[in-house]
Length: 466
Ligand code: GLA
Image 1 (tube, protein in one colour):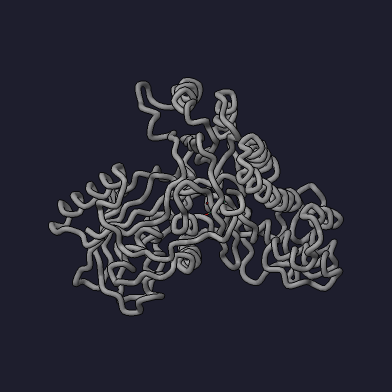
Image 2: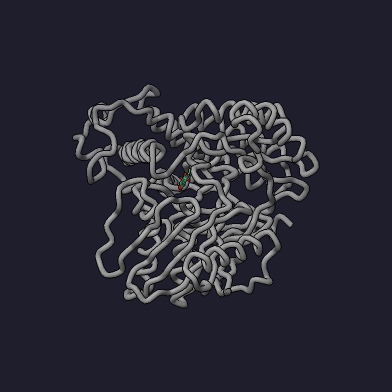
């Protein structure tokens, strides 16, 4: 099984529309509900419905934009987009999660709206449409979600993928999924987050019952079997982590810290002449025989473990600040001390854990996977500093309730945890968690159900003809 599971991912390249009757019953009902809501709102039936799943990352956090792999799976909850062409040259969208509609003209140049506005996600999707169809027709979209927003489950990328694929399908464009993953990852930077490509790739490429190891630059995927008899449990910390809000600033700072770490490593490896490294993972090309830990050791010879400013780093490397910094405006002022060595240590060690986690899954060694996930959480907390009080408490409650490998998942700063639970123990696990975590945080009598759920990995985006 292991060998087969690790063969190159046999992706179904086609996004060809499926029939409603091809869907399993809970999804079929959600699609039917979206069709009915569309009819009620616009007075006509949609032409098609697209279902784009959210994701949970088992391990490999903050590695993607550094060029290292991730190991996510698709959640069985999604963004559902019902769509039809219209005569007006614009995209109109309404969403059950938003009080105001979003609109995007197809005749004026695309301009970002203020941060936090959901129309930016729509505009990110329109960018991909324009790449394939330079003179597109307008459309009316209705967005519905069975995925909680701000829970770190990538509802925003599912929104961009769902609306983008719907717009392309209306124009009878069905590009290969892996090509779209790169297009959507680039387009989502329209929202202002310097994020990697994990969320878009898994929403497009996931296969049911498996996790997906994804490597980047260029994008490559491998299906990894998910052990039978277990469920992935996702639990919301109830602290919202919005990609368009505070989490965006904190996230972009981490990207900047890694960029500085990378520029410094480029000098260290080049012994004074800067090697052309774009991301931390590029270092492996220059020293392919080194274990990953050796890159951290090499950096530690120049970068102290305490926070250090870019100016101080440039001074100790004997280069000008301009030589050290990447082109463009700095994300953090050069005088501000940053914990660069800790961030880089997390990235290289986490990359090693992804390899080990894939091996553990192939062996069916759930306990080993759990230990790696716990080590990942500790590193996210201590070296990458993306945890928070609620996530720590939730992880502790989950561990006492018997979870395997509880850890924060996604960018952090709030959002959700992920863990594995034996199938037979799922109900008892949630009952304990409700008593120890949710009861005191939710209003009296509130149902914790929407905030924690178990599932087996689901499939990537689907187009359904209506
Ligand atoms: C967010 C980003 C991803 C990834 C994770 C952290 O979800 O969108 O690209 O960087 O954070 O692993």
